[in-house]
Length: 359
Image (cartoon, rainbow, N blue to C red; front, side):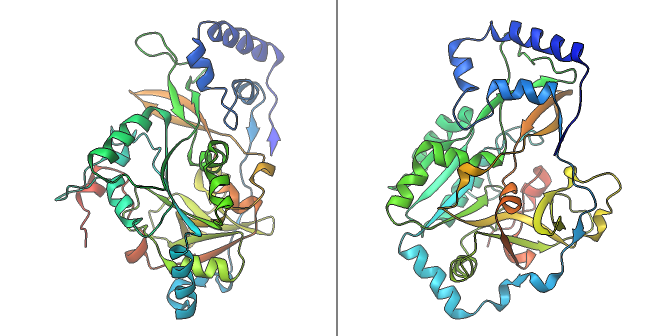
């Protein structure tokens, strides 16, 4: 990671404008962007004035001899995974903080075709075997999600709604974006918030104190991402730190690719790769389903904050986000290939939603 230099007068100009805007923030607005564990407003200012380059140069495809095949996992390993879940040693964590910018409403609350379920309630029903179920949401969605779960009669002991972190949107020249009422626009700072949010909420410590061992993490928008005891059993039996699920990549797939960089097998998002990288060489795609040891030293991670451009209301906005896949860079990770037809059906747009055929 390298810091790119910015002319001193530009840094000073941004800092002055930023300080002026901050003086207009209410105490509540300031508290939203200074929560411990999140992107502190001072760090945001530093990211803008001293940009950091997290691009990956010359990544290579991974030798597939090192990839586990889910179909070849032994039955005793699957039984071990079942036992871990039955003994409440695995928590089911649903990443549901996406604002659904491309769709126009939060993904978690999208209605499934020919069903009474939303993406979230579908996922909660898939998690019925777990005592500990954690739904990571943006603060703006928290109250709505709680009401939704209550209305669907899906409340239960062990179900926790965990709020991720927020920051403020900037425009293309790094000025604070204001809404029609002249207030700052907030956004959730990426699925990499999951681990810090679980840690700072106290949920993770409670789980560990009760004898919990692992976190099974899934995306709310992956219809097929339910419990697979084979992955849990493989992860625990081999004492893995992180076990990530991957699938065979199709030609037009973009997202997190499994690659090798600096001798480390890891998941790297396509936008981080240098322009000269031939992404066609990567044959395996992350499903963003992973099992993580709950007792890893997460507080030793220095999170990378990536500058992401989005189009909101036909305008370019800048958001800084962190990625859950950084776990594969920080901790030795293993990878298991699953059949795409059984484990990966993401909802990225309304066409994906309308094409869903539930079993």
